[in-house]
Length: 399
Image 1 (cartoon, rainbow, N blue to C red):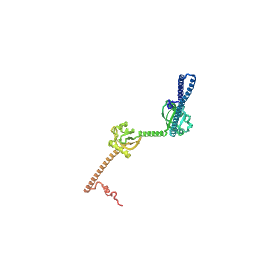
Image 2: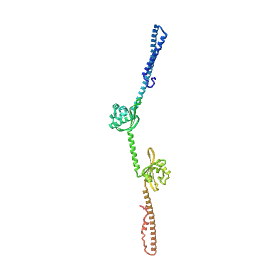
Image 3: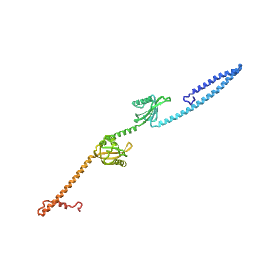
């Protein structure tokens, strides 16, 4: 195991040196004593050989120890340099993370397992209206109302207990009023993978929620008006003219129960117009704008009726459609037709009456002329005819 191996510790190198020294010393004593006894027999020689052996032992072990210690020192120095480089890299990473956190508009924070804040960025401080020094070391009870603090602390405990990321919406009281946050929270782990706390990144989505609520309210109002309108309203595909939506009154007029029935049949089209004509009207409305038409249609039961239809272009869900608003004008058209028939009948009656009157005047003229020839007084007064003949034509009067 070297210093670059994970789990390396300096004490292992020291133990290795001691073991090498012990093994070498034991082997030196064992073999050097046996060699001296074989090589020398005289006591003086044995003493002198033992002294030389001792000096050699000291010299050799010193060289060995020097080499081993130098190697260990080089290893420790290299390990220290690598550790320093690693720490510097970690420091740069931490500085980068801190810079990102401080420049973020999202609230970034971390808590220990007791719920105390151990990290809070500038945005989070601004949201709660407290500085980082006022928040660090405190839990949510020092920042939020009791019910909200209890909710937040229980959420942190649940995240630590379940050891998984969660994304939730939180409605919190801040110095700027009640705000809605979309928060992603997760567990913090140590090097051994043990949960040591929680972290969170929260984005203020109050404005988005307000817009969404307004859109929902607007859509509800539209559907209320759409569904309760007493006129037939349809939304058409601008290319085919086929309706993609219809209100209940439109279904009622045509005798259908569902929109799909209208889509599958063409009875909703007025008899004088083919499908291609309707497509042309829709395309014309899409191209030129509003179109105003009157046509006769018939329902699923064959009952014919008249509609006054206004076609206009609208944008629904980001897509351009053609909106038709139709009013049943059958009663008006029937009344107009009845008036027209009565007028024609009256005209014919007037013409017939005038003809009979002219015939009577002509007959009276003949009777008066015959009476004059017989020397009698004419029985009919036709002086009104002279008054009519003497009356100058209109427009011929001279000043």
